[in-house]
Amino acid sequence: MARGKLSDKEWHRKSAVEFFNGTWRLLEKRRRTKDEDDAMIHGAHASRFHWGLIGKPLNWSIGEWQVSHVYAVLGREEPAAYHARRCLELCKAHGLADFALAYAYEALARADALAGRKADFRKHVAAARAAGEEIEEKEDRDQFFADLETLPGYGRR
Image (cartoon, rainbow, N blue to C red):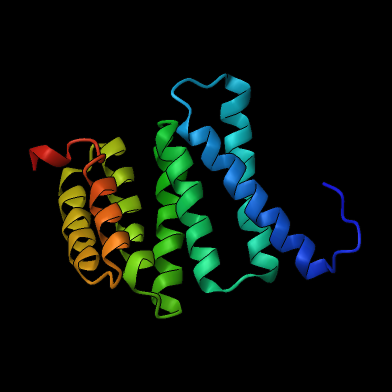
């Protein structure tokens, strides 16, 4: 990525956004190669790294959520759970609520579903739903509940 005349902060922000968006494009693909799966992992971590240098707690939380989500999509429960916990820790440490908190619980529930932790899954889904109800913007709230519906086993509570 060319740095040009960007300041360090501008370059890190641009990098964080580009890696995040590139990872999201890979997540949206119906079929990925092993190399694309690896690129998704590395891209999510790279985005989180750059946000860690210049972002704010909300950026860090979203970054941890994306890393967790990538691992969940790839069926890797342990790193999915680790980054979901980090996401929630950041929300609690910095007083983040709204969609950030709701998605932290969604990430935990998704990792629980992968690991077969039924009681934790139910607990985190309930927390996600409660936090989701507090999302201020209707569009964000609707998107959150649509995403919650994609949890494995969500309809069979």
